[in-house]
Length: 178
Image 1: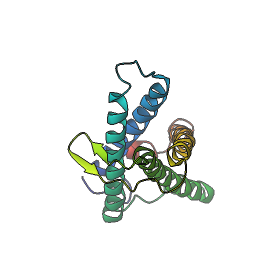
Image 2: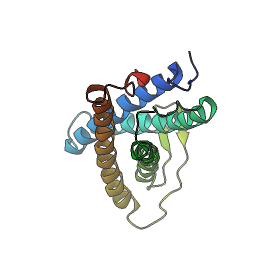
Image 3: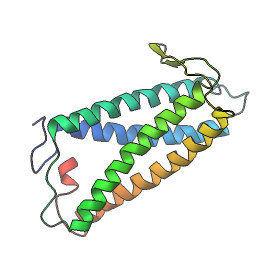
Image 4: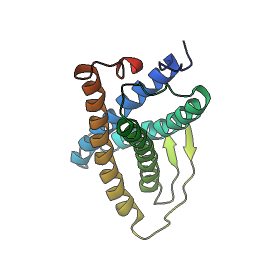
């Protein structure tokens, strides 16, 4: 079953969901690690290239995810879920998506503030818009970091809610994505 049903996510949605989740947490960890590198570290130049490249691919995957969601639909909420839970779930998912896109855009603005395009694994280059505002790299960097921490916090709450549904409520919320 590749397409979502009324009661279950399909394989494509599951693969995209877990690939996005692993990528987000990996990029966050690498971002923290990169912040500790000094100019003389071997990875000082290389790690940002991979971080940016994976970040751009994550942005592309998120575009595919949104298109797939419109194509495949979403399972209906469980009848055991309260109205506030359904509303909070929709709001959380919207916020997760918006945060990912905002992080990708802020990362792009950091990387291209000097007018150079953004190389993605040396496969292709995304052209630069250049510096749109004064201190763009620093401002976008601060925003990027704040949004990343916010995303991770929200993702942890999202996971905790799924585990709560599985362990305490004993419903199929988590199983629908496994």
